[in-house]
Length: 396
Image (tube, rainbow, N blue to C red):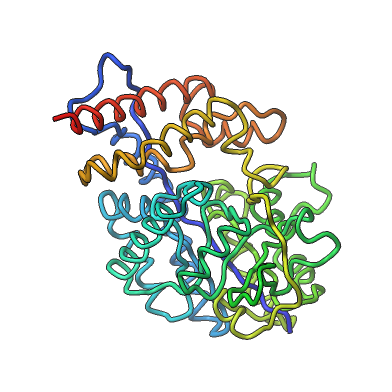
């Protein structure tokens, strides 16, 4: 029997205020608190609260049903500040024992792309601490920011003792092979296992559900989708998507909650089970290895890291933050370090893309800016100000 492995990314960035170099705050309070609260309140009411309740109901109705989440540290911070009831609803899911919480970078950052993985390890440790403190769980499975993965990242995560790591099931890596099996990294006698997103079936829910008649399979119903799942072969069908798929990206009027309510039962009737990532990799041996010398992700049509490093603006912001690392660590000021890491959150450079066609439309949907150039100017204003503050304090 092939099991479904449902994984949801739960993340909110800490968005920046509109700032100029001539009106910077005396401290490092660069954040748009009003906008962050408003967005978190909206998504909580549309997605987090109703979807968590629905999942709890599904677990009560179907003892076989299981899900997994990765909550970024920035999400947890804002939940504690703006909507403690949201965090409490995730605690209720954790207490069922049928919701696995995965490890990731606390700041949802691109630190895995740095030459030195010391910062990546520090953010993973910070995330581990907040998961233990707020949810009472100690994650055993890792998913990197936006499923970014390469050989180096796999080695680092293996060295930290995790059972497995998730990434995108792109043909650039798999070729003719199926994403529905467990794989291992192609480096020696690796103990860590790799789960690959079945992007076609995942995107049918995440991106095509509300497409309307332009999609030949619309409308997507629970029985139809369960039929597709039942026809799949392999160890696991990895359905990885943003949690905001439910209620925010696909509005309730689209029927997305009705779909989620009925799909697990329809799947179970057809002999499809549900497992968490750690269960999958403990249950199955790898059928082969994957060699990934270049970074891949689940973003955009290329499924590489061009969503964040496509143009010179993005590269400048990324490199300036990375080059600040030794100075921030030397200063060792908690407020400065926290601000520096919040600026590493991948969303900030994501807003600066100048890619074209459908990818640009997706970037602009998430962006609070009118253009990628405005996003870059505001981001660099803040980065430059933080840099000046760091060097000024080091000279004291």
